[in-house]
Length: 249
Ligand code: 13P
Image 1: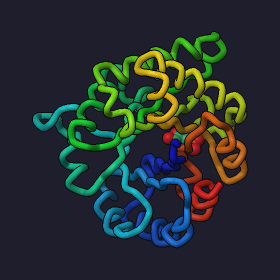
Image 2: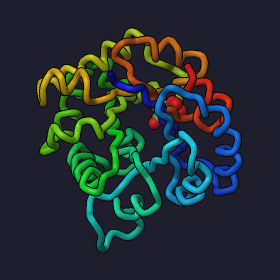
Image 3: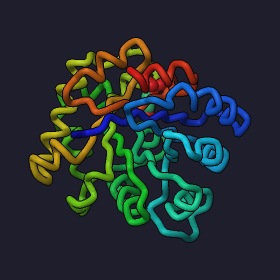
C-alpha cells in the first residue's frame, strides 16, 4: 500500500517569525492526520521549523539542494547542510526552478543522486506547460522528464522517492486539472516507472502526488482517485486551517 503524502511547498514565503506562527497553528490541527505530512520551507526557516515540529507528526523538507557535495558554488546549499538540520524531504526540479533558474532534466537528475547519497528523500517535480498540453505533448514531456530524472537511480531507492505531477498551467492559477485528468496523467508517469523499473515498483514503491491549485475544496475529489497518492500544495499551505483541511481531505 502506498501511504498518502501531503507536502506544503512554501516557496519564497514566511520569515522565521511567520514560520513560528504558522507551524504553531498547524501542529494541533494535523496531529491525527492519516497522511504523511511534510512542510518544505525556505532554507532560512529550516532550523526554526525543525525545532518547532520536533516530536510531532510533521516532517521537515527543503525546496532545493545542490548536486555537488561541497565547493565553490556561491549561494548554494548542499545535502550535508540539510541533513545536519534534520531535513528529510527535498523538492527537486520544481517548474519554477525549470522556468526561472535554468533547471534542466540533467541537473534534476544530478540533484536527485546527491540527495539520495546523503539519505534525503527527493520529491521530484514533473509536468507539462500549457503550450505543451495544447500541442499534444503531455506524454512525451512526462516520459522524458521522468526517464531523465531517474537515470542511474537504483530500484532499491524507489521507496525513498516521491514524484509530484504538477501541470505548470495549474500552478498558482486557480485552475486545477480535473481529478480524472490528473489521475489519467499520473497513470502515464506510473507506466513510465513500470517500463523503467518493474510493474511492482511502479504500483507499490513509488508515490505520485498531484500539485497545482490543490485546496480544501478539491482535495477530497483528487485524493479519491486511485493513482493520486497525495499533494504538493503551494498557496493553500500558507494558511494553517486550509493546509490542515487538505491534509485531512
Ligand atoms: P499552488 O498550490 O499555489 O498552485 O502551487 C502548487 C505548487 O507549485 C506546489 O509545488
